Length: 205
Image 1 (cartoon, rainbow, N blue to C red):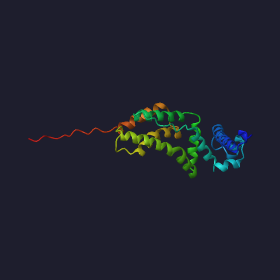
Image 2: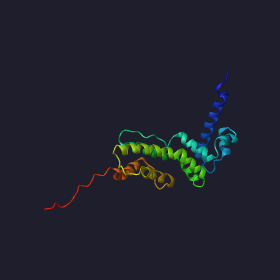
Image 3: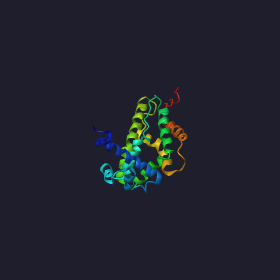
Image 4: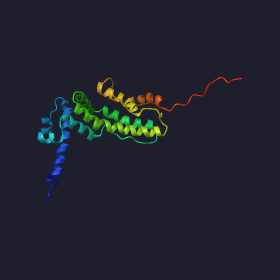
């Protein structure tokens, strides 16, 4: 009788998970720069060739590990209130940015500035799917007349999330859920549909 542990697919899945867990653990303990493929392999109990069979670099390993956690991909609710739904999702992101684990995300983004392949992996795996989710929710709100019909939704996505990433990457101030309310209040002053100005003029005699 074949046991689960003898099943090649099970062993592969177990090794895959062990590598991702090891990469996150080492990066948190000693930082991105000191984390190597050799160290990840040793921590995971696999051969280095196993890692390179699935990923081209340690950055690629960490990008998948971050994505697997799903910490930055909290889905958008659709309660019919775009302001409330954005607040719910953005507060979840802000809370993640306050955690120790978010330091790995910050370091991976930093490393990608000199590694085009890593930068593309971050865009493809972590950024673009989230942007698309947000854009779809904004499109529905736009169709419902909750935001201006002429608002460029790609610009809106950047406008509301840039302040969170600014604090995460530069550490100017702590990221906080309260920041979300400030961002949305500022943004929605410009996004609410405009009421046409009443026509003015001097009636002729």
